Structures are given as structure tokens and as C-alpha cells.
Length: 318
Image (tube, rainbow, N blue to C red; front, side):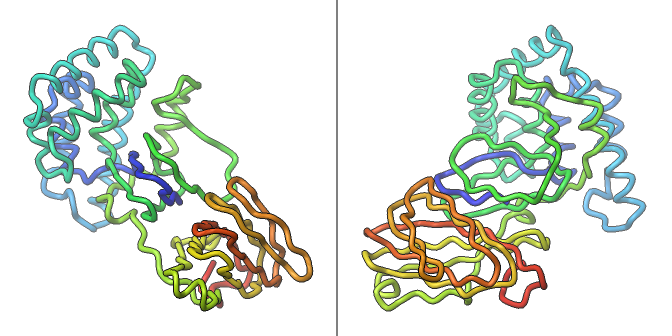
């Protein structure tokens, strides 16, 4: 799960299939790189069933998406081919402007937005295969406080901005692009779920967290405790924003451990009779069943508390 701290943009999961089909028809450098035959096979395979929920149709769609994605990724070691395709892509973006990618068609992104995006990314990662994945993956922008959730084995990329990231225990990172590190194409193309959905399906709406008490000083200054609760059991996160000196947030004890990190301001954290300083970059572990009190020393005190409840969602968490 990624919670934006500053304005953020990134790529998250595969786009709806009608958007990918549109790009394969309107972005000539993309079509040429993937190959005319592969592009046509994808378009014809998913045509008319892009949004079908029928299991056989979904399975067929995923196989078509895997084939097309694998065809793109197969060029990752073809430096000359990729460099030539990138030059054509950037030239097209520069000359077409708002008409780039057919004006972006059914995509929520405009042609001008995608043109600026590929030019920006190419300035940071020249001739990178990731430039072409922009047309396969959802492009998302998050304002501070907005969040998105990523299922296991789904593809994503963080492009710019600061986030609070929380993830379940993992023993692997398989890279696709926008990095000088090794890219294991065979493992990558074989492990992905190839789920496809609009970005709205992956954005999260926080709710008030009921198992924290904000004192009167905090309430009067519009302080808040927001719960980000993804559809998994491994973790949830509470963002606490205290906006007055001396404002307090008291968290009830839960049947599971927590990790508290401060991203802005100064204050203290207390568990039982023990009180410690808490400032930007400080991290503390809080044991199960322990009540935890956060107190601000200034006008702005922001913390994130990741936690896991071992007995289910009795207290509004995971």
C-alpha cells in the first residue's frame, strides 16, 4: 500500500484492455516494437469481451495480455532496436502534442499528458523499456493523503513524489524497467497475475479510525486519525495528524504489534510509564495490548502507525 505524503505519480497495474488496444492502434512506435502480428492478435483476442466477467473470457484476455507484454519485454536486451523505437516515440510525442496516442482515447489521460510523461521519463531513463510500458499500465496521480493498494504479483512503478509504503513480508523484487539493476524477464513475465482494471479500483478511501482518542486541544485544531485498511489480513495503517502544541492521540491496546513512524514535526510517544522523543524519521515498535499515547510539541505533528491484529478485525484493523 502506498500513501502519498507529497504529490505523487506512478504506474499501477495493467490498464483496462480497451485502452491498451487503443494505444496499439494509435502509437506507431509501440505497434512496431511489439510487432504487427502480435498487436493485431491482442486486439482481435480481446475485442468485444474487454469487460466480460465470464471466467473463460477473462482467462483468454489474460493470456492475450501476457503474450503482448512478453513481446514488449523481449526487446529489453535489444539495445539498438530499443534505442531506435524510443527515438521514434519521443519524436512522435514532440510533434503530435495533444493528439499523441490518438488524444489518449478511452484512457483517463490526455494525449498531451502522456506526451509530456514519456518525454520526462526518457530524460531520466533514456531508451528504457519502461517508456513503452506506460501504454500498458495505469498512470496514477495521488494528492497528499490519497492512497493505492497493490495486490501481490501485480506490476507497479513509483515515478515521483514521497510516499509512506507498507507491505507484507516478501522475499523477492522482480524488476521490469526504470532501473539500472538486473531485469529477470522470464521470471517477471511468468509470475504476474495479468489482472486488468481501471486505476479507480486500486485507489483507497481512508475512514476515521474509531479506536483512538483525540483530546479537546487536538479536536479544536482539526486533528485527525485516518484508517487505511486494505483488503488483506497482513496490515493496516493509521495516519495521525495533530495540529496543536500539547495535542494528544491515545491509541487503545490491540491484539497485535505496531510500528510508529513520524514524518513531520516533533512530539513524544508514551507506553506505560515510559516516554520517548519522537521526531521526523524516528521509528518505534509498540508491543501487542499496549496503550500508546502520542503528544505534539508544535503546530504540526504527523505520524503513521502500521499494525496487525492477530485475532481478526475486532478493532477496525487487520
